[in-house]
Image (cartoon, rainbow, N blue to C red; front, side, top):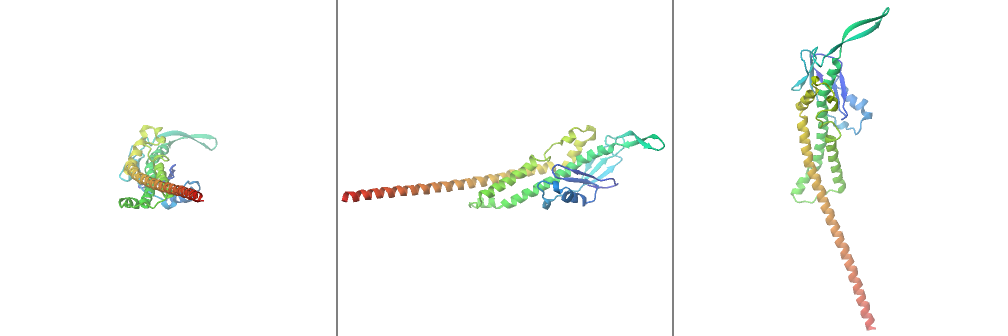
Length: 278
């Protein structure tokens, strides 16, 4: 996230999906954080498949609430609104004795941070989706010849290990999308406990729509349904081939058994004839 009009201390949010969202920090910092600092804690890293998403944001002192227009996020920082509440606090400073001084201490940082987390969910989900989309594209690339082979009536030169591998890859992608991440959550648990006035649910929905998160999730599931059909055809084809192979093995064994029986009958007849001649 790059800030437009004014500078302030940067923020970095790390999501359970393995996504890092940074606000107002040097461009190389998130990459260094992901590839160096946090890398020892990473499960199933994919450094060769890093995805990034850039959005502009601005802190607007004239706005009562945060919103998003186009690719720009506007954080409402107007004093007195729900996201910039202030409180009177007592600071104790020691001079000749204990002396109290009143000052206004902004508590807006917490609420603005919550708004940033709500907006950060969009890039976090978008980059995770981009990784899954890349994985699915690789899956389709490795199986693109199968429909052509089937349309030409050719046999499939694949082994059970190949089919199991592709089935496992597809199940892993589907699980990462629908089970093991917050990608499909309508609203993360964090926002259920927040005050309605903060508008975090609205911010979450706005950034999701701006980055087409919902549409991409639906498209990805539809593509995986098609990929599942390919995997099902592969399993059915190999099962049929395996069944045919077993049938031929059984026929061969029966043929051998019949041959032995015929030989035994022939030998019995032969010995019977020889015994009668004697």
